[in-house]
Amino acid sequence: MKYDVAIIGGGPAGYTAAERAAAGGLSTILFEKNALGGVCLNEGCVPTKTLLYSAKVYDTIKHAQKYAVKAENPTFDFPKIIARKNKVVKKLTAGIRMKMTEHGVVVVNGEAEIKGRAADGTITIACGEETYEAANLLLCTGSETVIPPIPGLAETEYWTSREALQTKELPASLVIIGGGVIGMEFASFFNSMGTEVHVVEMLDKILGPMDKELSEMLQAEYAKRGIKFYLGHKVTAVHGGEVTVEKEDESFVISGEKVLLSVGRRPVTKGFGLETLGVEPFRNGIKVNQYMQTSLPNVYACGDITAFSLLAHTAVSEAEVAVKHIQGKAGDGMSYKAIPGVVYTNPEIAGVGKTEEELQAEGIPYTVKKLPMAFSGRFVAENEQGSGVCKLILAEDETVIGAHLLGNPASELIVIAGLAIEKGMKADELRSIVFPHPTVGEIIKETLFV
Ligand SMILES: Cc1cc2nc3c(=O)[nH]c(=O)nc-3n(C[C@H](O)[C@H](O)[C@H](O)COP(=O)(O)OP(=O)(O)OC[C@H]3O[C@@H](n4cnc5c(N)ncnc54)[C@H](O)[C@@H]3O)c2cc1C
Image 1 (cartoon, rainbow, N blue to C red):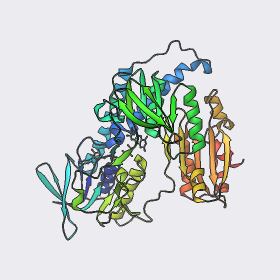
Image 2: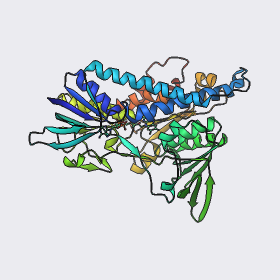
Image 3: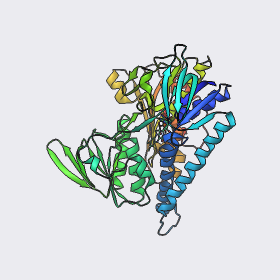
């Protein structure tokens, strides 16, 4: 049998593509060598957020007296926190499997290997003893942790995010190499649980390209809570729990019971016969057009493999675009104008659209409207002594082009700004929307009146 669509990789890109393709009547086969759900469900978004929620509950109870509630000597059961995380992952991955069955997707558990592409475009894929044929191929193999060539690292038992999520015991101290999104989410979790946390970052700010001002505010908040930051420091060696760092001509050692490496992720493009197709590369991933087509028209690439966004929601949208294109109804294709980025620390930080730093680099004029979160009544009611900021960025013609929020629940509120940016709304149009009162979301409307 020749399938309409074959998909390699069952993460957010792959399972979304499979579901949409099969629901649209296309015969669909999905190959997954590990667990359905990919990195996101098994060792990424979902398990981290589950752990962070336990930490948030614990933090809330620790500070219950701020809300005139008494809770003496709050404590936690760490193995049970990990067990709950595993339960959540199991439940959600089972849900994905059920969806695949419901829609009639053929799921093959095994490592797929591309064998070739015939003159008529037919793709041949091998998996185990079997070979399969498909008219279209979606490459959704995702990404893996970057392991830099730091002297001593290979001989050290370090953690990546995968091992950190599996730990059964809390380390007394932890050195995190890399203060990006993943590093900071783990820093937040372990700090809440009482671990002494050190964050080493080579750049002069945490959280990579996120809004500088808000990133610095979040860093200051975590510094107050005891996390030690080493910005602009390069790791030159790792030996056991001893991490040697260097800044200009100063060099010293930071010691931790564990070392967590989180310096980034890179697309998985090797080991599954991709070279037989000869698709054009982009950075360390694969080049695609707005319909997610690679340089071969019936071969698509979606998700982290494109090396573009490395976020689950981007992967999902790209998969939807690719399947629509196969069905001949892709419209304008993929838009990257309003991809939200969220860090699920406590408080959360979220951004969408342009940052001030990007606009300055591009020489684009803009105006900023900014208000402390305390201008929202609901925020004050629910965040005793908590601080935060809502920053909106407008183009010269008052089109909303960026939004950056620090404060809970930024991850939910950022959708409002994302909608405005994606739809090219002007400040006046967003002002005319009725927001329910009292909600923290009102801060977005309020900020536009500044
Ligand atoms: C700790 C952590 C936290 C994260 N938190 C968030 C978050 O909060 N929000 C967010 O948006 N993103 C988050 N991410 C990123 C997110 O997980 C990825 O962007 C997302 O999983 C990408 O989806 P994907 O489908 O492209 O690839 P993946 O999820 O990586 O899935 C690829 C799948 O392909 C399979 N595969 C590879 N090669 C083969 C082969 N030859 N044959 C068969 N199967 C194969 C793999 O086993 C894997 O299951 C996080 C990542 C990490 C590591």
